[in-house]
Length: 318
Image (tube, rainbow, N blue to C red; front, side):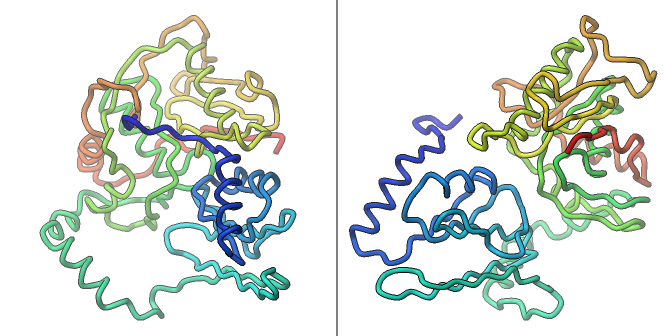
């Protein structure tokens, strides 16, 4: 949705740039990538001349770099939890020995950088009071991680169903956001950590059961397609008001089954229309309240927060 820009994997362009770097005398070629761990494993198998790929996007924490052909691949987790380190011994223009480590970062034993701390404080200072404003408290652990629903996702889905009066809710498969411990206060900062978007509108539409099933199948194929170059998604779309079984290793069209409406425990009917709420749509002209405003209202009204319907997905055959 950026005019003049398009996005693709384009391994032939990567190979051309690697060749150019080598021709100019580069002894070591390192690819900084946001493709994701699976995609970059395939890149390493196709491209010649890359010594190291430092990969991101899928948040995998790999204890030691893996080797594919002559390329080392390291993914260093997310949220500043680890520092990835690779050491290379180079002789006569070639890598002859390597070692790698994933180093845990303990923030309470590391001296913060003074300049960066000052800059962050300066940027945050006008918003500090608002960011620290308490809007509720969590009764249970609230987290977001994994290919399927986390408890923060469950709460967001609950909020959409109540505030938008829907039977089913959908929430994007995001990985970002911090965890809250049971009994912890929920601040505006915590809420924005889960919902800050520049396309935050919460839509309310009708979908047939068939369309809902097809949507889940399509997103699931973006994650579990056996060819990494067709894995375009992040994590599975989160659901509320609905349960289902997922078989990641099956083919598209066969991965999602046993869909049931939570409130009635009745099967999802293909021809029936259901009222669905969701957010994070990249379609133009989406209308509805911003998810962070909706979630703040929900948390403020409830005061004590926990997921109403957790673990909506049963994953089999992994």
